[in-house]
Image (cartoon, rainbow, N blue to C red; front, side, top):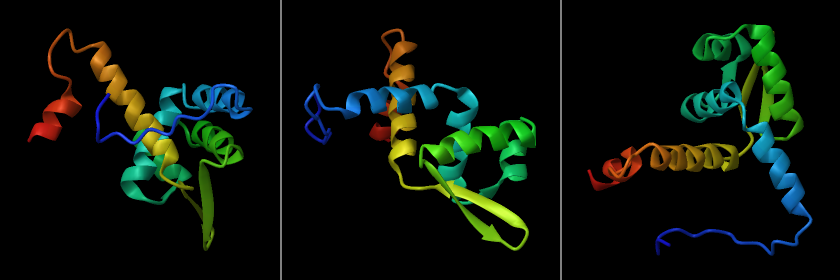
Length: 121
């Protein structure tokens, strides 16, 4: 355990455990992870811009965004005829970031994972 990590540790019997499992399920799709990362990096993006960035069709990206929006992870803003999407808050991006860090550990083969090397720079 690292002293600089402030981890919220709720009671395992909380009713939110099942909802947390649903959140992880929602974020278990690589396209949705890429969408979250692009929205974190760019702030607001249209469906077409996101589709180009994640190399998927606009209709497919729109379906992913609808699921993220139902989970209140993304929100929309109308700009003329364009709908812009953004993260509701930083929680989805933090979850994705932590999952990527864990993935780096999984494949590090005893070497220092990338995120640890970046922290030393």
